[in-house]
Length: 73
Image (cartoon, rainbow, N blue to C red; front, side, top):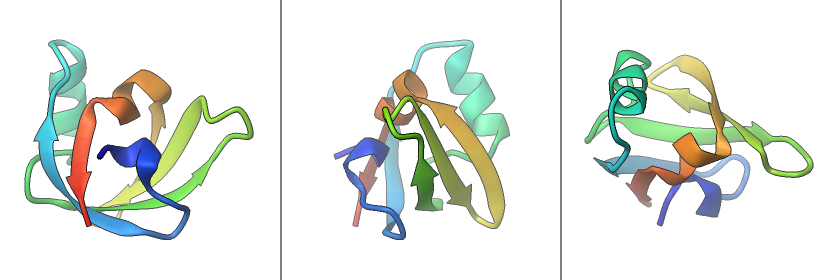
C-alpha cells in the first residue's frame, strides 16, 4: 500500500521509496525514508496533493510522489 491508501489521521511506517532521482533525493531530504513513521493529515478534494507528518515535519506531496512511497500499518 502507499500513502494514498491511508485514511486521514492514520499512521504507518515507510517500507520503501520507489521514486527515481531527483524526486527520490527530494523525498529523502524531507525525511521520507524507510523506517520513518508517517501520518496522513489531509488531502485536497481531488486528491492531487497529500499533506503528511513525517517524524514531526509537515510535508505536502504531489500525487505522483505520494504514490511512490510504500507504507505498512
